[in-house]
Image (cartoon, rainbow, N blue to C red; front, side, top):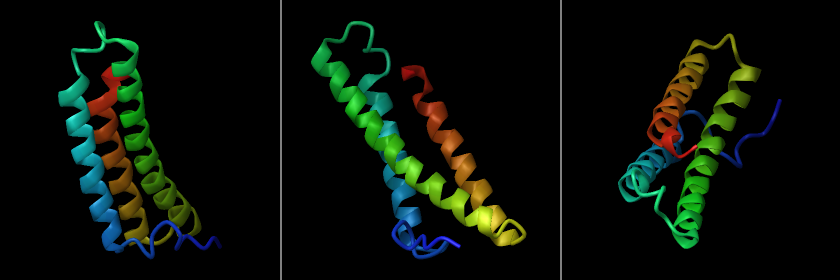
Length: 102
């Protein structure tokens, strides 16, 4: 079994909800700042958008990675399965907000 405490202490770690709020906020700001403005953007503006999107995706990867790894070791645990599903749904929500940039 993996030691995942470098990511989060448990599925109830308060950092998970804090990180979700930060990701959601950053994704909303990303949309407000860049949506509809990319086609006429200069290279500095595009680089800024890419850097901000990378931060969002990196933070999301930490959450999804943790959820996946803990689920893969305890897939018979209903609470863990529910946690994994909720993180996947959150990931879809964030992806839906930023997919226009891809």
